[in-house]
Image 1 (tube, rainbow, N blue to C red):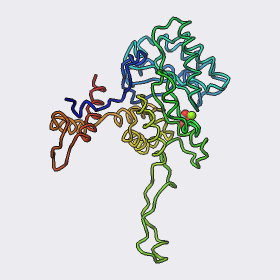
Image 2: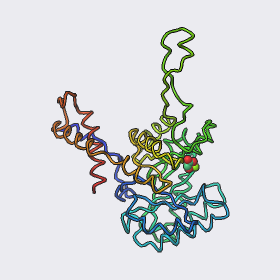
Image 3: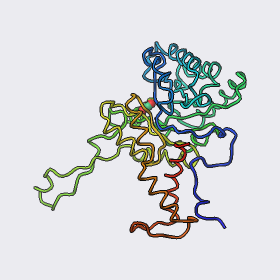
Image 4: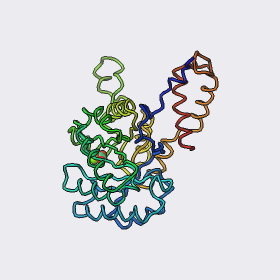
Length: 346
Ligand code: GLV
Ligand code: MG
């Protein structure tokens, strides 16, 4: 007889696919570096093992005049850092290529697959607006991989950063078995949607709700009433998580631009973690520690989850633990926590 635990759906769902043979690796922090910046590039070898993913960024934040240097720099770093990449060491190597309609996107893909396609794990594609963008990358990668004689396909990660991309998010997730995950790009998304925030991620003090007036009097209506800041990205992240999980791929938060504000950074990361994201971007070394801590379940949460799973036996029925009702569904919630703890410990 099947128990409730049989119906627990781990994140990587769907029929076995040869492309998915690559084991799921923790990717709590995707740390961005600019390969055209000699200071940043020099730090890369020492960062191997300190972060789940190192990402050589070729797109926004790299000046147009440095695009070639960034691409060449990434090739050199990947070749020289012998422990970099999931097949060679503890830290994955990703890249963010330039947009598909930019003057550099095609050269990025061609050069990187040809030169370091056996080291790169994931290619992040910005400004993806529909399945057609992923189909284009998928076919191009297939040609380049065949030409380079690669024996493992490269995975693709899309950035969700336009209104049109949001509308098409389900078809983007389903567009290719190469799809590994999606990140939110809150800066481009805010600009594209004409949102009136100039912040890169995080909340906004103007996006709030205010406590009701005590009574209908003018005095209480005009009084200073308690305000509660709301999560500006709640809808976007939730929709992205649903699209990713229902297609068996991973949802990620993206950048948090106020490097000095570690408190708000942690809040944004935690909101995304609680809503289902598996990781986030890091734009500064101090954001790596925040991401690693936020996207790892706490000892208390895992201990509690293991107690519930043990108390639930085959996972059916209901039990009382510490005055709270636990049943098949809460057992599955706890299995999410236990599975994540086991993946991170592996
Ligand atoms: C990231 O690329 C963003 O636009 O926020
Ligand atoms: Mg962007």
